[in-house]
Amino acid sequence: SWAFYNLGDTYIMTLNETHKPHGAIHWWIQQVISAALIPLTLWYVYVISIHIIPGVDNTQMLSSFLQELVQNKFMLLAPLVILTMLHSYLGLNESIEDYIHNSITKVICLVSIQIIVLKTSKFLLLYLMH
Image 1 (cartoon, helix red, strand yellow):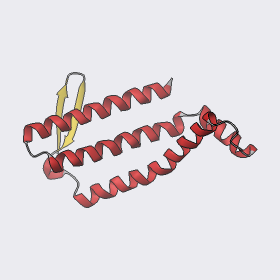
Image 2 (tube, one colour; image 1 turned 30 degrees about the vertical axis):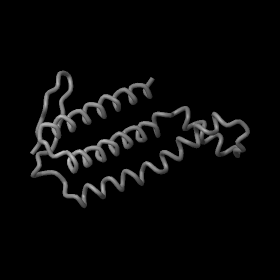
Image 3 (cartoon, helix red, strand yellow; image 1 turned 45 degrees about the vertical axis):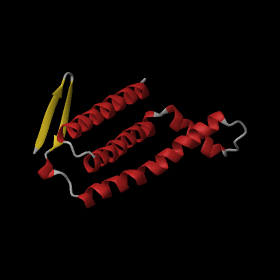
Image 4 (cartoon, one colour; image 1 turned 120 degrees about the horizontal axis):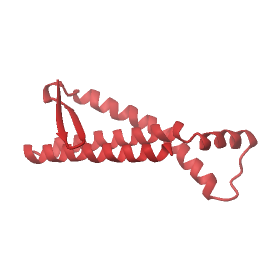
């Protein structure tokens, strides 16, 4: 079952302790997201490097392909932002649950992480859409 927290204009939704994924499932989710982030990050670094580093030798086909990706930046930057924020959230969430034992402090930290990740994701996605 889900637990909802109302924090002003933000609703935080978390799974109750009895329905959280087991450690192995959580670990696999982290690994799949990490694997997906590798090509997206390499693409981002490469696109940035061809715009910053002068004299990078590109073939015509690669150049036209990258130009289309740069023009449609939302196509690959949005998944990069979403997966990076999700990966960060899951990692921080796991660390907080493992190493913070005071219940009140744990809830405050978990809710704070959710707010920060949601607000940052919203800001970055809205920025990319313009």
